[in-house]
Image 1 (cartoon, rainbow, N blue to C red):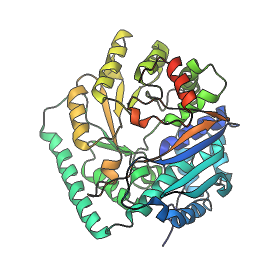
Image 2: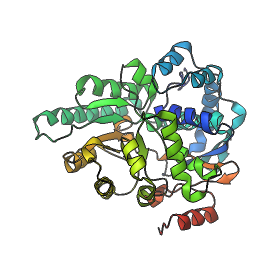
Image 3: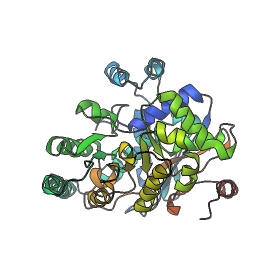
Length: 395
């Protein structure tokens, strides 16, 4: 059987956009990423140990092909020196540990951030696909296609519903938690061909290239978190991260992630300068309605026309929750909806909740103070308490 990952484009776009920014701004940063499974599993993940190791070995044998580099170079925000870096890039097996951890898996990537940050999505895709291979494939695909068909019908029904000021826009964000790579391709192709009016792209760079779709993504938590260890005053790390993003992309990729230390702390830093320069905001934790109302109130306070801005929702959405949010906000601001697990792994099976997060940079802990407490991740309780104190977070 061929390896799960056969192309280094088979990952999220924001891996490349953050990678380029880090290469240009902080290429010397050393970092640690740690795998965590937050959910109960049907069998011990340690049973996958040998297969995961083999898949990581295969991943580390891959290099970017010329046609892949040509595609990346065609994206106007990708710079030629970054493409040259990717031309000689190869994952180093010595930078990632895959060991047993009781019934679970100990997977840790440690080394120069520009060499290890790319492991995250590939590791999650590998563990997911190996895990779900243990279940009956025929029945899972039958149920998956039934549910996919129902989603497509539901989207097609939008044409008969009352119009809102701004259109519904759906994106696939499913690469990290997909049932399998072939299934994600089938899902994305079905939405792209049957609901093109509403389906606007995918975060998966390989599928975007192959299916002639728009690749979607800007930044993730790791980008902002790393600035907690880049020598700026801790209170100013979000400002420094956003400013570097502005300087790197000069107006492209203008959706800012808001919940690294919570929405309230983010808005305290998101002043008139940033609010005018960024196209919009992405929600990834906490109550989405409360978050959206806070964003609208902030734009109103700054006297910025919200109709020229965008809210992107991406926290555990289903199509139904996305449509409900759309009904609530679509007459006041542009909306986009990134659905991951519930597009790429809705097969009637209990889904995994796995992450691989940045835990240390330059030898010191970093943390995310999510608006959903269960998403907070930090190995150092003392640092977490300090971060909460600095940003006046009480939860």
